[in-house]
Image (cartoon, rainbow, N blue to C red; front, top):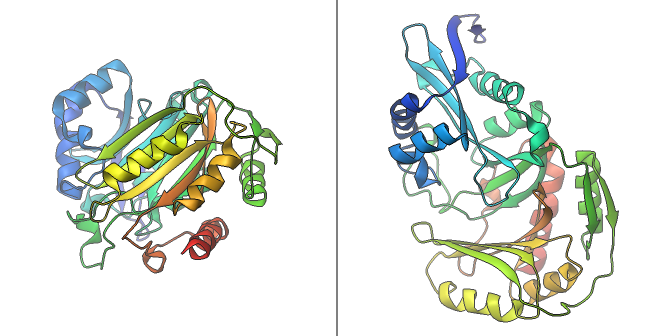
Length: 338
């Protein structure tokens, strides 16, 4: 195919799905453009990338120039924390090939090639240092649902962010578009009815609001706790809430909360009748509502953020104008809880 930049210069490219033998070139391009900052270290592991491509767990669309040069890549990973979804990422374009809308072409190719009807959604965590990836997603029908704040350290500067005064950690905008999940089920929205209604209406899926919830009735919580030691970042994914959730979270905060520049993002199952109870409890522990991770497999999730000694640098976060309303709500929650 032929692509053009704004000066009407042409670039001849072939876009295709990556094969296992493409793994060394994919990793080399990631290193060249991003150093070692990319948040998923598995993508630097040659064996992992080869195996994942071969098993169909990782789909990578790549663009090759006529001389065989790898011009750009983007990928979709089905092995993420939300089973039944596709996570878009890895968007990387060689500097000499930038300005030709390769991100859009690579993304379009992936969506046309993959069968999205086998996934509840396809989502991506867009960098908030600029709005390029956000604009690509918005143009492809994605909507903002929430934010993952103070996530991964920015010590290793990305080449295309050089010269910027970076925050300590990346702040990510969560966007998604629906796949085969057309009914989000019963949503126990608590005090966030207006925000939650707007998100699900924009996604075009059915749902039923249940404003009144209950305390956990019995049984153990079903939670996964993941601490990224390098980044001082902890995620807690709560699929089911039990009366032990208070102690479970207390143990997590005791173990990691005293570390310098530690941050937490907790995902609460919005379909669980105990979700409003969990909201109130999290707020007493310093967390604030940071939006949704919607259509995330079987369940819907609310996001709550807490960083004991690390402010959220909203003044350094770039958000696409079309996403500004949702993001201002999240900032308002932050200011209210300070």
